[in-house]
Image 1 (tube, one colour):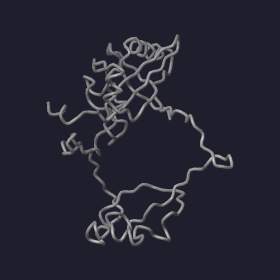
Image 2 (tube, one colour):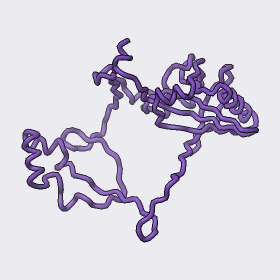
Image 3 (tube, one colour):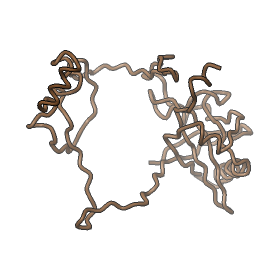
Image 4 (cartoon, one colour):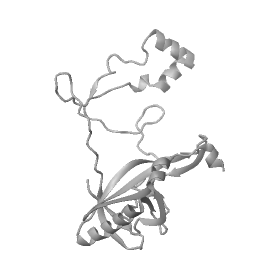
Length: 237
């Protein structure tokens, strides 16, 4: 699905363009022994009454649960486990498995040592990819090799022009990054340092722009990450 995005270049000139996710096709084709393509099927793994938390509460101690699992199958409901699921809907439940209708979502940030560092409320923060202030270049370029070693890019979106003027706008951005062989760190806010939110209450991401050109063609990719690879020793220094 194509969505609008408000973005500025390194000269603070901005435009509203489009972006979309372009999943890459699989190089391998899976087939059954008969040569037919397999159909994906979703099945029920376990019921609430036989979840890990409920089984621990029933047997009292992990050793007792391990013994019960060795001697039988208390985690399996013969009538429900393995049932084929057709239509499903995600819901939030409380500790008693009742549907919760008013939910507050928080993002908990942990340090490399596993200790909670920060807790943010995700319910009231609006998305900012198409806000009044555009996503801006922060002025920092990260070499591609360094970016691949430091970050895990979980989402990738291709930026697309909507007319001739935005073609030149995006092409020039892609050409500059192509020549630099680097990714540009972009973000929200006046300095381009705030996290990117794709939707209201969504996951905050750090954004990088990658550009490629070939003749008169260009490819400008917005890469999002919320995972930076670092060690505890590096964090303490």
